[in-house]
Image (cartoon, rainbow, N blue to C red):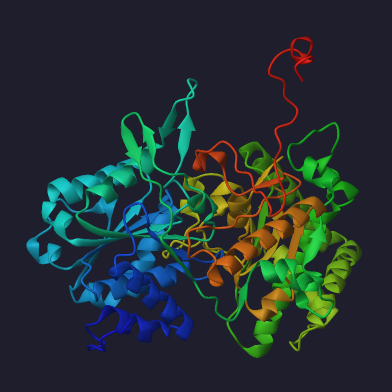
Length: 569
């Protein structure tokens, strides 16, 4: 596609290109995406797809696509976000920051749909407009009313709908007791809006596209025909240097010469079970520093403290900014489990404080183990390695001066209280430990993550869910990687490794052009422990992958009783 070189102070795309210094690969991705949209290669039921990795720069890329679309006769962009205030705020703040010059000079308006004024003037309506809309019933109703009733002139303009985290809430079906399939309210409302618009294009953005590629053909539900959202084209969001994902965690980790080799540490199943709930007859919390059943958790907390202290000592040596660091514990969904885990870690912190004051030899023993653990990987780098005595003194001060904070994140209220003004989790102290479940996944950015204790262990793993839990993926400095550790059970690690292989194969098939015919190959786990996504996201009851030269035979059933059919057979 040929992009006209207009005045960079007036042209959205060139301005953002200069501001963000897009790589050639990112520019190609943005331009190819918008070219496909302009050519009319999408429709309401065949949207475009921007496929990225977890925390890989998908937002940056779709914002670039919005900018280029504005330069090519699109008037409105509707950005659908996951249905939480945290992610909506994060997206709104990002858009304000990216388009700040245009916003300030009154060539662009950006609104959270729930804060949309009731008295927009023609002066504002004639500008480019971006609506940020949570995938939530009231947000979508308000958007529908604004476009089709309050300001009907908007309905005739050219609109780009960007569905961020497109596999979340935008699709789905519920079965009633009568086995009648009902399209979920949010999915239906999005479908209503996109079909009512006169001139619109639809762009999905996600890192976990399995449900989108597995959509069935048109479905008639109570006289309403739902058009499936199968992508008409897929553009891969390119990765920049410094991205750490599945390749690092599950491929490079097999190489003894790689920093990744030191990353994984195994959690015993007994420890994971103990973290589900507190049985006072089985576990005495006051013995938390001696009980072997929580060895990995205790060592993980100390590794995090020592690792964070080492990075801050390195920064002091280099006279650079002192960063704050984070650690996530994600093993359960239930709030009671989170409260028990918080009590446990608070007790560990309390007893660390006690031995820092009264039993330096005990603290030294724990520190020595963690220091040796981290030196094994630090020695693979050319960075400054502080002496043990220096680390011990700094760790002691960090414990005594209360540089460690433990927070549970159970609800949207919890997470909103922890957000900074950009919508990211705020790191309030040098060492931050977050305990939570689903609320800590999809879209939430957690800076300087150097420890991840993961233990979600369902009977059947949903590939999209597990990947969205992987908050340890993202752009990480090499110096942080040297002290980063990932804790999980051997079984979960193997499942995550298999998910990485499946996901990588899907992306390779797209890159190699095998998806051009509309066929996407999603592999099936032979052990039947992994499924691509929740069954509620695809209406078909079973998805069976049949390999070449294999067959399915109708065996193991009878039409009538054995005595009746035996002579015939």
